Image (cartoon, rainbow, N blue to C red; front, side, top):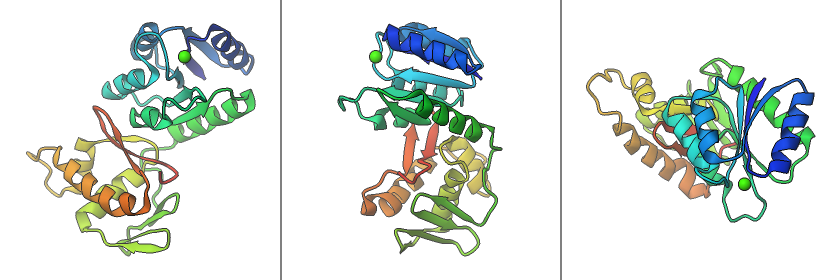
Length: 230
Ligand code: CA
């Protein structure tokens, strides 16, 4: 794999470079957000990008958001400090695929990278089965039923279509236009921002009552289903 590492702690960056190179990956390292952003946008294609959240210059979340805004779906693994000052939700909201809290072991890092690579290699709609699942959220497209935590959730046909569109691609950003094209019978001439209305009502039905965040906003792009259901 060709991997970009953006990390300002030089010792950690160097050990990542050595460790990943030893596993046969080609590694490029940036030590600040400006260089990281430049490489992320123009240095690729990469198979994976490791982004530290706190960087001099643009931080990891901003770099990730910029990549997604450019339509770059390269898997991003966000590295976060343990101090808890910065919520991993910030990184995930920016479109990161996963996060790792420092310090982490190489075994864990390797496993996460392999999982990201597998997910990225999966074809578009990952599942063709009738029942879609994200954690404890289930959506049966044939029976048109939605359940979470054993409770039935009433959805309109349109809400069900929008949710299915996201659940078919767990963890991947889906543009509003794509949702519109797939779910609306005649999407031509409709403002893709209409999708926001359905996302809001879905969040009120499938997330708020359960204290969850399944549908994440990918700034500048659209939405993303948390693979574990949030
Ligand atoms: Ca840092």
